[in-house]
Length: 344
Image 1 (cartoon, helix red, strand yellow):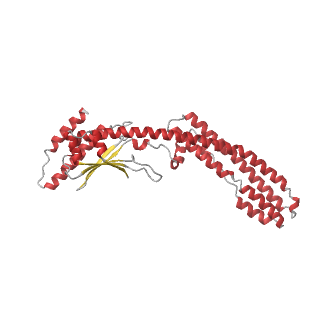
Image 2 (image 1 turned 135 degrees about the vertical axis):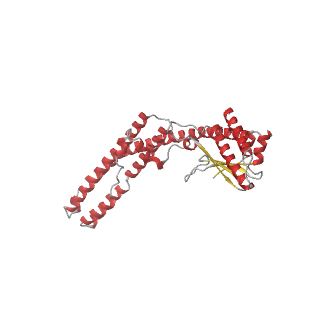
Image 3 (image 1 turned 45 degrees about the vertical axis):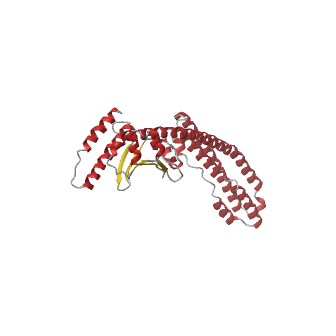
């Protein structure tokens, strides 16, 4: 803070030297310098000038503009904007690519293909000789349609994968645990893929049987139905495992996200307290701001979240409120509580 104070005193002294033959141009030039000085104070005080490495970008920024008859608008970008929600479904594929070294089996395994029921219907319709046989085959195909487990399994595996990646990025599971979970997902997907293959084989054999005979009674439909029921019996425990894994991981991920949100809100509160303390202590840098105008602080990405976007958190302060801090009649906490605050 001592360094900030020294910087501010030197900068304010420089401001007094600004002169212009045109009053309006002089005011705008002075406001511009005020914005640059005040932005630098906030960057330093909020520790936004730090880097992760020599060639890394700064951890944040403060950029300002002036709108005549409205006031100064400062956009504050901080690391908090990137640490609130660490995972979303939209980033699922990119996360898989980033972690491909750990979960290559999952990344390279195709999704479960659903059986082509319409093609089965068309193929068998061409080969049927009798209406009774048509009814038999139609009932059989309907039983397959009503037990289309491939979509449900794939959705469950997608939820499980998303939740596992979310837990990993939230620091709740390590690389080894993530690798094990993804291997389980891959095994379930492969298992279901094998069952889909068995359905395809059953379909082909039934079609061949229908084409090779004109008598529907000569086709052992009971045998085909028994094989189908055997496939369903094999799938049920796999489907149950996929559901259970998805439910457990989703519950863990949801709890971790709630805990992270509570932690993040505490970090936001501390950040804003520091911000308003700086504004209260060094608001004199904006003395060129006309008396009837405002200082607007736009905290990028720190407002409310919804499905479409992450809103900004905005604080609006009148110059007279800043002057209250300068005169010592208003504390930083009172300044914060008196601000007009909203998300947009």
